[in-house]
Structure formats: structure tokens, C-alpha cells
Image 1 (cartoon, rainbow, N blue to C red):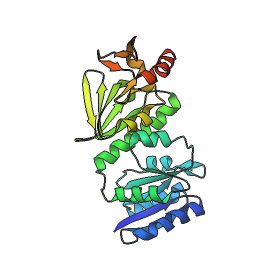
Image 2 (image 1 turned 180 degrees about the vertical axis):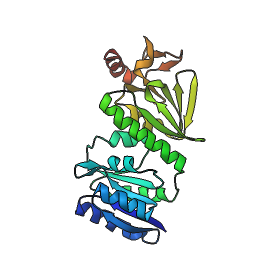
Image 3 (image 1 turned 120 degrees about the horizontal axis):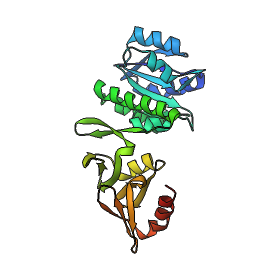
Image 4 (image 1 turned 90 degrees about the horizontal axis):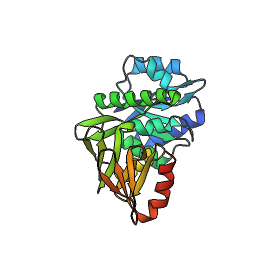
Length: 250
């Protein structure tokens, strides 16, 4: 049986999570419901939960304030957050689970199912490292990192080091500076959604490139992008106009 703590300052949000947990009463038991960062810190130390459902904004503090106060994070975390919250991209980049309010039942079920797989503490530590790094860098405007799952575990990548991504059915090959390559069990669409706001462009159904890493454009029906690692990437005819527009804006 997994022990859970709910941390939220809004009663209707607490009620929603409690309602959705009813069907999992044979797997998860809620040992505490708390409404402040201070209460949460004490409860975590006392109860040693397996998972916490953690609201991002808790009155004038945040769930991140809570996590930074803990000596160790040895439990799973499912964040809950309002639409348009500044932390959503940070969650995506760190591969941590988050639920948008009002919490959707199907998304909630997916998150709970993942709990049964139990992430290793080493992987959780890496995810938290990426999360806190990106939250801090968002303030400073510096480079960001993403956490990607590989056969060895989680790998942390500076997105500024990514030259291009190439599809291989349900896998993606990520080509990095220094002639490095990482293969990830994620689709190219996943990385397109993750990186499209960071100067990445889908030139072809099989290719996503970092526009900053384009050395030159070679004319043709669609043409080719010559990347800084010496590779040639095809540009689909229907994407050529948008590609050239985006490239000229870099």
C-alpha cells in the first residue's frame, strides 16, 4: 500500500484528488491532507510518504519552496498546477509528472499507473536537478536542459548542444555537438512539441533541426540544410517557405 499526502490550499482541488483516488483505495491510502508548506514539511518528515500530490502555488509560496527545504526527496511527486503556469515547460523538460487543474480523470489515471513502475531514486534526483535548473535559468534567461530516457537511465542534455533529431519509427536519434549521438524511445513529435519554442524546426517528417546550428541553406526544390556537424538535412517542399522565414529570423 502506497502512502500519500495531498498538499493544496484549495478545498475543491483537494476534494477532486480525493474523489479520483477512491478507485485506487486498494493501492493508495491518503495519510494526510495539508494546506501549507510548513504543514507539508512536518507531515512528510512524520509520515514518510511514498507519493505526494503537490500543488505548485500554495498561498504566497510554491511547491518548489517545500522541496528545497527537505533534506532528501525519497518519494514520488505528482504536481498539480493551473493553466498557463510558468512551470509547465520546466515539468516537460524534466520528465516529471504534472496534472493541469481542473484535474482530468484520464490524465490522473495515467499518472497513478506510472506510480506502480516506481522510478529509481537516482532518476528522480536527476529529474529534480533538471527542474530546479530550468526554473532558475528561466529567471536568468540562460540555457535549459532536458531529461531524456535512454537504456542506461536518464540523460541530461543542454538543448544548446543539440544539432538535430532524426526519426526512426518510435525512436529518435539525437545528434549532439562533439559527434555524440543518443537514441531515445520517444517519437520525433514528442521532441518537436518540447523544443519548437527554442529555435527548433521540423524540416521533414523525419527531421527536426536546431536552426542555430544551420551552416547554410542549399537551394533546390525543397533544398537542404547543411548543419554545423557536416550533415545534410532535407527540407520538404511544403515546409520550405516557413523554414526560410524562421531561418532568417535567427
